[in-house]
Length: 79
Image (cartoon, rainbow, N blue to C red):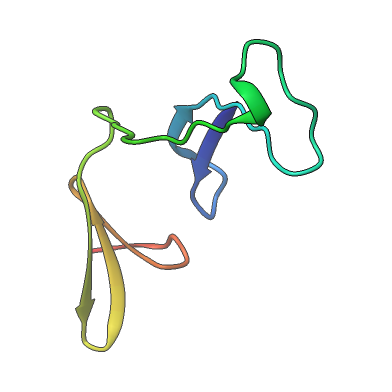
């Protein structure tokens, strides 16, 4: 599955590919799983492709700092 983050104008900001398998309640057990439909969890997820993201409050407004860009919670870029 690919997850794409876009700005208000529809321009792609970031794109990440992820894959997962689930065996939640009501789903059939897949071949090769442990007895009783044991589920395996994710211990650690790493993403070395994205810049560090920080959130700050400036003049009472929450801003998101990512790489060299600053944006509002709605995705509008500010300077």
